[in-house]
Image 1 (tube, rainbow, N blue to C red):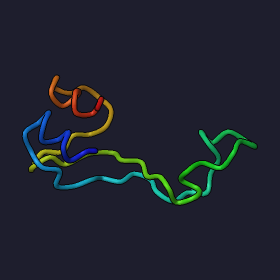
Image 2: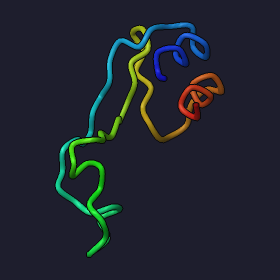
Image 3: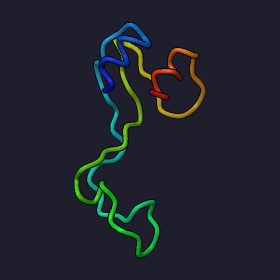
Image 4: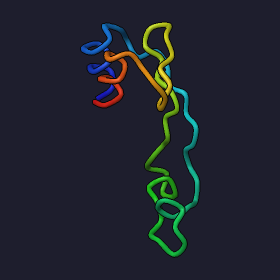
Length: 73
């Protein structure tokens, strides 16, 4: 769960999400003839960043140890 992890690892509240993809009728990993992805069924989203308090933490790239622990969890 994101909210308890944000509090435990970063001492702040989850105040926003940056969504980079949601419903998309595609196969798993965009592999031809693979089963449909959870995105295709409307059951998944791709999060590009989390806003904890007033700070954005982008998924990917380099982070402080605390931010990385949050993302890893």
